[in-house]
View 1: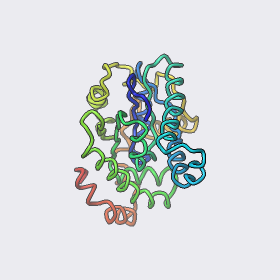
View 2: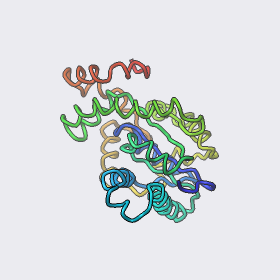
View 3: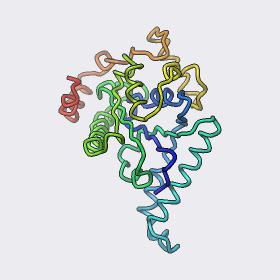
View 4: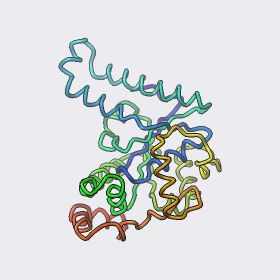
Length: 258
């Protein structure tokens, strides 16, 4: 609904704890791309257009009008934020937008979707480490749901609208992975994306402390640490492994992780 003649929005999606924040910071380091903190704004707007439509329609405007207004507002603050950093293009990283792709594309038909995929067992291990056992159990099912939604969209999307990034590839071979991504985004290569820790970012202090702790625990010196790849082998107990394989095993095999 929003005029995208001058800029194509970028949305980074994927199951939470799949490395979307790492990718966000890398893209935010590019001289042309601004990727600020996640908002969750569009989830609330979709809910309002659905559950509260009986109130909104009393204003006399149709749904297309409201979608246009939402898109204009959302793009406006992202562009103002980007221009404040002397960048021309904006991106948003919000993993929970993944199930809401149809609504997002109704607002921004020309947007480019970057789908971050990570071994689901490591996603579960990360949830357990960060938020506890119950969240780990929930994530075993959520991983399948989120990845399926993203991949199904990708099967039918145009080549210039959908791009998958594997977390493991990003960590083990960041330059090759980012060169492919930037080619998809039609942006020039810039080495700054490989040095995201040297660039300023608007991030929560807790994230900076958390990643520094991770780096220290893994005795990592590089900006990108690989100590979390395969963490499930030492951190998932037999029950969590069983639950994950029951819920998400077929998809894990389909993606080539086993």
